[in-house]
Image (cartoon, rainbow, N blue to C red):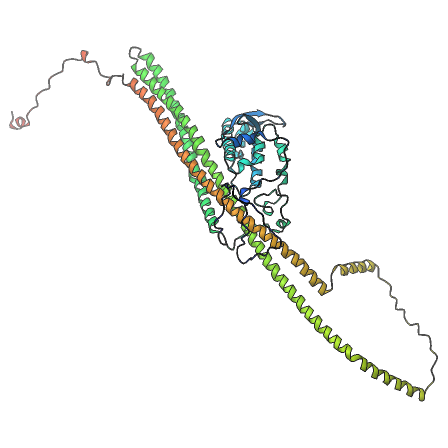
Length: 573
């Protein structure tokens, strides 16, 4: 399939656009080439008519009041409200409003956003606890402070990414999620979530909850994600290859090395802590033994304190790297999986279009064969009709001659009777022609009669019924291929535009990650340098050679003996 050139960007707002919808069941499409439906403003994602809510959501005005919005998760509290077992609820602060949601409700929000917007990149949420976490910590896994703190940060990032998205930020479901006066159960049991179809592939891509969508969507096939394409779009093939390489690199070497680096920084901090404690204890011991010379004990104490300070700065460095490097790396690994699923959806839409093309071609060929058979049958019937008319025109003369011949024969019989007519005798009774019905034959006869009634044995009627059904199916497929072409065009354009937006976001995020890493190392080095410079000043107070006696008590130096000449020994002197 040729690439869709000059696609509109759904993230650009243009007031001059004139939305129109031109879908006709009678439209004839040239299926030998990629369909080009009329240019419509599908990409502005028209607001679905869900019906009026009881009250205007408070978060709407706050989110739309400023581009620089910041949603905070200020606390994580343990509660058991509405449940038999305790769970963690996260306190969300959006402007002056607060809402409380548990992890499963965040997960539900994201799941339904994926269904409402199948062509957009929905940000990820932190992963669930692994089986290993539960095996190691068992019942305490949900109460792990480190896990809860990590979830707070990543869930906050999830909400802020949605709030800054040019399309997702306007979604009413998201606004109601931030409204503390609306329960999530109420949101799940109201539009648009209750209007979501069972199969997203058989719904409009721009608005899966559209209740006025054409019934022809139900005629679209449901292709497999692995179904090959006849004419793939090279742009998205390149996107799939790039995403696979990106995912392999992010989720492979980068994340593994980052985790290993974090572990080594944590081990180093632990070593600094143990070394600092040992030096502090050693300084106390030296202070007791050498009360007259306290410079050594003070220097040891300062060295121990420098190790303690380095331990604290290393722990802070590890925490900063965890928040500003390791977690974003993991998040972008999740983004890669999300983009893969997005490209699979677009691939299925493309396969759906090609399969509908094939089905329409097959139906048209079948219809042509049936119409050809119908034309041949009509020609044969017309020929037989002309033959019957010709025979009927020659029948009157032949009938008159036969009638005269019969009259002559009857006259001869009357003139020469040969025998008398005999009285009629009753017929011989003979064997009876009535046959007794075998047991069970009544039911079989009735069933046979019913089946013969169901089966149209008249080939002409069957052919005409087949033509009628085929025309109906062909018309439905023509509508379906028009819708599939529109969906494919919209999906390609919207996914490409969101991929471009994601690329810009990725570049900005990775730049910020690198800056944060450099800043964290600089602060770690600065604090460590200050602690070790203070220790050095105390160490400098110790004499250079404390194991030598003072110069005042040293004896006078002995002059060196003259060196004996070796030639004197040789000459015997």
